[in-house]
Image 1 (cartoon, rainbow, N blue to C red):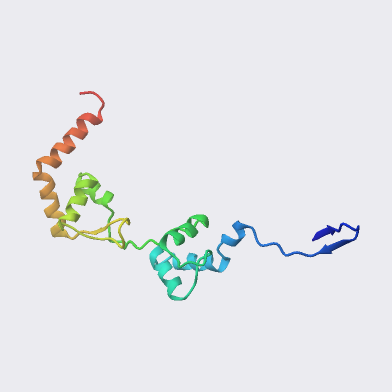
Image 2 (image 1 turned 90 degrees about the vertical axis):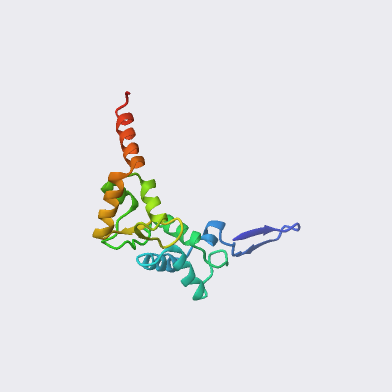
Length: 163
């Protein structure tokens, strides 16, 4: 409500609709958040954004959705990302521990196609599937490698604190 007092002494009351504040204009509607929550069980952020864009939805700013926008919505509303790792798959850290090697050795094996790994997008983790012949080949590699053995020996010596 606005109260105007005119120069001649008269006054006027007007009902004025104020625009919503910036936070309310930029806030994603509950329906969008709920849709992200549902889709995040089975899709990565980029796929959710693509689905919204294909359906003709626009973001709070009127622009097409991006993976970063979906990531922001998930972060603000504590929505966990999709877990698309299969039960039989291992992480880089699990493989490194299993073979007594460093993560960088496992990345080397992936880059040189010594083990089978998949990754949905750049920046996401690798998921590794090992079969029995691959495991035996890697155990032999670790056993005969001077670099990996030296790396383990130096980690053991320096890990104790004194030389």
